[in-house]
Structures are given as structure tokens and as C-alpha cells.
Image (tube, rainbow over all chains, first blue to last red; front, side, top):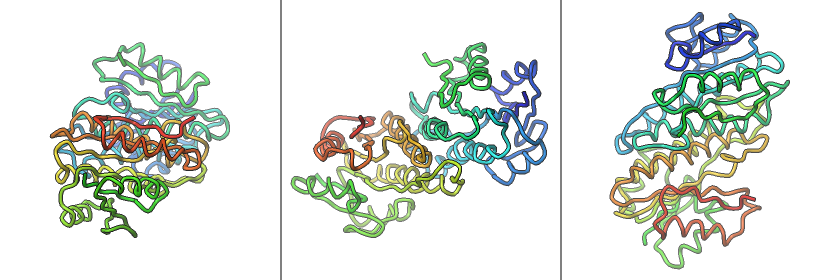
Length: 187
Length: 187
């Protein structure tokens, strides 16, 4: 399988990429690292990426920034960071990627536990994560050509068992799962 | 109680406003209607609103646009409409309104059933609604001075019993509910 991994150099990307490389052809992409440079907040940059790499069987996004801050220190700009970098960027990957993904291919996005079970200081993360989860639930209903979409929702990286994380990604990429919020490390 | 209602002239606003007016002092505000003009997507416009009306005991938002469209016709701009007009606008209302709301006051936002139970064509709504729900869950943990925040999540207006809708708003405004996703007309 030819798999695009965006954010392969992040905490989660570093765990899953070597495992997926054992059995699949992996292309990594990121703003500052990877085989190909891409800024997924830009549709033009995504189109340029796919022009270079061609069709893929799976697109995985393990990247997306949002701001952690006390509610009373949050500003519209801080909320917008997560909205732009984690939510709209991943939506861009899907709406652009749909033109470049194989029949029966898959998208695997990333959200996070704070979307469903927030803690103090997490409202910026909660907004982005909750929106990504809802996007996946909705988009899964309309994927064309057998394409599937799921989202990995991890807890803090320190609360995650490596095996659970890998199994979550394999479930999304290699099974018939569609529209799943795959929760990892929730207690 | 002095209650600000944004979007009093919309489908839901028209149901709840006359009921709340029976017992409370109501100030209505909206882009094109209401006692005071406001564009809640602009923090400056919200500051100007509160400069005119002073402190309120409850702030209710029953307004927020998002785009309904088949997934394959959605664009980044269409998603951004809901993000800006329904999500970021309501966040603006809260972060600006916190400076102008009474101790033990309340915010009542609006989301919608498509955030949790989307149907085909609803991905634009799903994103905005899911994000608003998660914002409320997170923000409720950090409200200062006894202030509370809840969100009304209505189904389609035709599936809603008027009494349920009114009871939902009264629960948010007049009880100790905090961090609630108040679902109306779900089947």
C-alpha cells in the first residue's frame, strides 16, 4: 500500500511511521520535515504535494497545532490557531486528497481526548478536536468510491500504550472501519 | 433578570423571546434586527454592544450560519463560513461577554444535532456544531465568579416541541446547570 503520512516527525508520527514502513511504501510530508514539503493549511500546497507524489492508497495526518491556555487568557486569535492548523488544515487534506486517493483508500485524521473530555486550559484544543470528530462522522456518510475516513483521538502521549496506538492506525488503514472515532489511552 | 438575546428574530429566537419577555428584561441584538445592532463575528462590535447595554445577567445566542452542501461540493470557504459565523462568533461572545456578565450569570449558546448525529450534506454544520459543544464542555470548567455556560443543541425546527425548547432555555438560564449539552428534539 502507498501511504502518505503528514507529520511523521511528531510524537505520534515517530511511533507509527517505522511500523508502517515494514509493510508499506511510505511517503512522509510536513512543513519542516519529510520527503516532501507541504503546508496543509494551504489547498495550493496540498495540490502541489499530490502533483509530486501522485495517487495514494491511504493518507494519514498526525499533525495539527492548537493552543493550550487558561480560558481567561484565550483570545480569538488563539482559538483561530487550532481552527486553522488542526481543523481546517485536515479538512483541506480530505477535500483535496479525495481527488488523489485510490478507490477503497482511506483517510486517517487526528483529534484528541480534550474534544470529549476536556480539562482546564484545554478549550483551544477542545474546539479543534471536537470539530474534527464531527467532521469525520459527517464526511464518512458521503465518501465516494469506497473511500473511508476515521480519526484517531489520542490521550496525552504519556498515557498511550504504543501497541494501542499502532492497532488504532492499522484499524483505520487496513480494515473496513469508516466514520470511527478511534480512542487511544482514554481511562 | 436582564437577558441579552442575539438572533431573537430567527426561528428559535422567535419562539423563546416572547416567553422570556413575560418575566425578564430582554435586550435583543442582531446583524439586521433587534434593539441594538451587533456582528458577533467581530470582537469590536461586541465591545460596542456591551458599552451600550451594560452588564447583563444572561447572554443567549440563537444565531449562527453554516453551509449545507454535499461533501464533494464543499470547499474550504464553505467550511469557514460555519467556523466563523457559528463557532468563532459564539466564542467571541463568551470571551468578550465575560467582562460584562454578572456574578452567577449565564451564557447559552447554540449548536445542533448534526454535530453528534450528522446526515448527508451536513458536514459544514457538523464541524461548527461539534466544535461549539466541545467549547462549552471545556469553558464550563473555567468560568469565573459563578458564571455558567450551556449549549442548546436542537434538531430540525420542524422536529422540535415548543415546550421542550423553552424548558431547555429555562434550564440553562435559571438553574445551576453548567457545561450541559441540552439536546432538543433528538429522536
